[in-house]
Image: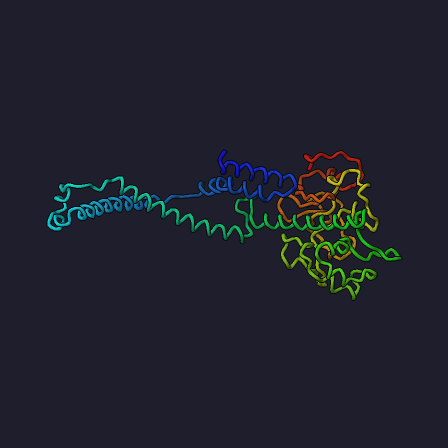
Length: 358
């Protein structure tokens, strides 16, 4: 088995495994590289209108160039073989001189190499131009298809959710139940969000140490902290100007599942009888972005994906990144039945949900 074939099999296996855990970007890139040119040609070729006059002129010039090059190279090689005679003989007499003749196939090979170099230069220029466009443009390469910059932002958002899930797992190792969805004071007033509680596990210990947990998140003594930008809580799929509100609070584009993080009571892992791989922990949102420090940052998955301003949804076309309690991130499509999402939202509803359902 050749190394190339082995490499292809390994790449297919990697793409398949990443797709199984919700990371679809490598598969999207591979499909775009293998099939994108076909979609491009199907879209562009019907619109081409050849300039037959220009084509005829190009063919004529190529033929004339080939004939002239052949005559010139034939003269050069005869002159090199018979320098003394070449100076005093006519062109017709050159043909009768003994020695090796310049063959037409040699001229054809040189012309073919020149033409190939010309097209290679055009291809390299076009590749450099299109690669720059692909990485910087906000428009997709094909209508409704792959877009590298959006795919990169979607992958970064999935990574943010992965970090949130990892922080939750690290906190769980210290305290067996899941962290609460918020903290409250003695009067039952909401103080801080679940995102505040996992800050130490997001490499934000210094920021966490500045918070007075006995005072509300928006108390003047805490205000400076919650106006601080925390990268893992911001979805790169949205422009920077949407990352703050009019009061300067740093916003987040992620929310928790109300059935798991909805309130001060902790949900224990043993109580998630539906299974941690079938229970949503948090996900992307596209409307009503709250400050990351504000308690009450949770949504109901039963509202569907991209179907309600108060539900989950993502900036990527067709769905949203969702993280489950077991730490797996999956891209859930808009078309998933809200009943399935309701089942995935409840930790102990007893509903039978198959992976094919979402």
